[in-house]
Length: 305
Image (tube, rainbow, N blue to C red; front, side, top):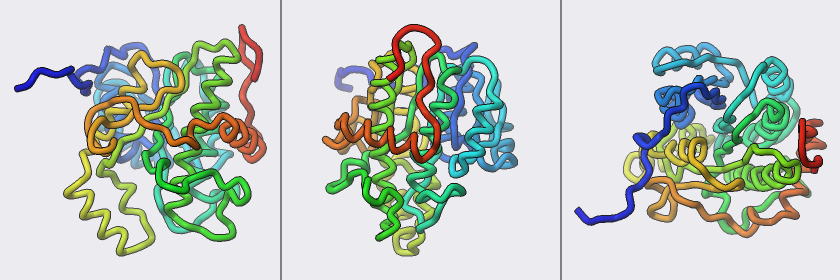
């Protein structure tokens, strides 16, 4: 066995006793694994899910302290209700829930489903919960944001003129990273100790790949899931790392092998578009306009961005 630096794994999770963590989309896939490991480490984990029955069923299989609350990120009234009902401190918010490359659809509020669910819902949820958050926000992105030509379509944000499932998905994942970047800038300007982070799972076998509207794509994804993808347990490692380790604000974590498709947590690469402060601020302002949710004024110290 060759000597090399030890790679971070679930066994390296610190004790999280006394901490409260919300995991969105915790009723399946990476969300369930993330919730399970955080609860096993001692955190009180809130499973924020669309399907309460399914979430409750999953919660019965988890160790430690858990609870289930309803949250539909494709419905801004549900997001507002979830946030309004929150009392007390919240240590970590994990924006995990999302949809991938689905047929064209609209949210309750009329937004393209992937942009609405993957970006606008978490954007609103984070800002509404921010007065309660004490430690950090972790948003699950994707290395799909680095595909050639991926950008934010400000002139047609809802893909009303020409819908592409994959382009819409890639836009939403780039939006996750621009959101994290601008959120960190605003937190720093406000003098807040809260930090913003992003993570991606690489190519992990989850239920997301089974929701494509194309039968051919479903077959291809089933094959690649079987032979190329890493497990959902490995895919959750970057999120767990970002949620628990000492990291600089604005960090981005992904797998360390095979072009960030598999492996253990390590710093991940951002596309030039994801590092663009002008895009980040423009997207933030558009998101405020679309959701009517704004960055909350800090309780103490700093000035609002």
